[in-house]
Length: 366
Figure 1 (cartoon, rainbow, N blue to C red):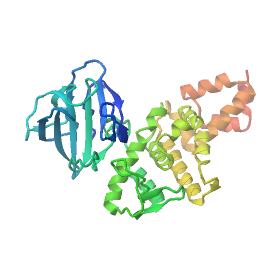
Figure 2 (spheres, one colour; figure 1 turned 90 degrees about the vertical axis):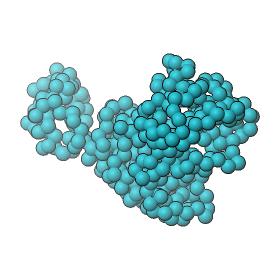
Figure 3 (spheres, one colour; figure 1 turned 180 degrees about the vertical axis):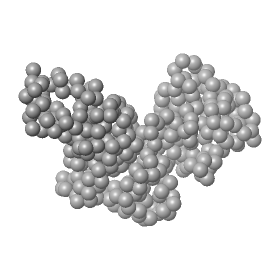
Figure 4 (cartoon, rainbow, N blue to C red; figure 1 turned 90 degrees about the horizontal axis):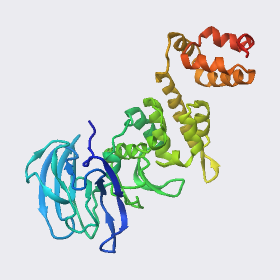
C-alpha cells in the first residue's frame, strides 16, 4: 500500500502545485498550495482519505475553501495534514478516525472556484497559512500517483555518496544554492537561499521524498520493465540532472526502451560536464551509476531457457556481447536465424563460441 492514496477515482490533474500562480478568480498572484483534480467520469464524485488519520476539522466558509476537511496523519513518525476543499458535502465528523481510501465527502464547487473539482493539499507538519503562503505545503502530485517502483536504500545511499551532506546552503558548480544532499528547493517549492540551514536527519528525510518525486517521471518516458538496480541508477541520474532529463534526451530514452544497454550506458556517461568542462566528480558518479545499471542486468528475468541463462552466466558481459554478435550476424546475412534464436532462447555457450570463430555464420548464412 502506498503512503498516500489518490483521493479521487478516474482522476485528471487540472491545476498544478505552484508557489506563484495568478488566481483565476481573484486575479492576484498567490501560492497554489495544492493540486486541482476532477473525476473524468462523474462530476460530483466521492472523495477519499489519502491516508489513515484523524479528522481535525470539518468546516464551511462562504469564500476560500468553501466546505473543506483537514485530516491529521502520522506516517513513519512524521506528521502530515491533508486538505480537501470546495466539497459539496461531508460524510465525516471532527475527531473521527478514518482509514486510507475511506470516503469522506463529495466533490463540489463551494467557496471560490471555477467549477466542480477537488482542491487537494498535503502539508508536512501542521497546516499553516500566513500572508497567502503555506510554509508547510508540499507538492502532493508525485506522492499520490501510483508508482511502479520506489527508490531502494541502495539508490538513496548512492545519491548520498555523490551529493554529500552540507548543513549550510552553498553555491553548487551550477551556481544554484543547494543544501543537505543536493536539495535546491524546500518542500513548499521555495528555493534554497544563502543562510539556510538543515540537520542531517532533516536532509535524509527530504532526500527520500524528493528523490522519489524525481523518479516518478522515469516511467513517463520508459515503457519497459526495469530491475530495481536499473531504476535506482536512473533515479540517481535524474536527481542530478533533473526529473525530465529522459524527456529531453529522446535518444537515451529510445535506447532504454529498445534495451540497447551498450548505448544507454554510453550516453549516460556523456553527462560529465559543468559549464562545458569535464568534471572528474561527474565522471566518477556516472561510472557508479552505470555500474549499478549494468548490475541490474544480472537481475533481469529475460531467460526463457536454461541454455540462454547458461550462456549469460558464462559471458557476464553478454548484454553488450550479444549486441555485437547480432550486428555481425546481420552483416553476414543470416539475421533471421539469429533473431529466432534470440527470441526463443535457444542460444547456447557453444553457439557463442562458434560464432566467435565464424563457424556459425558460415553454417547458417542465408
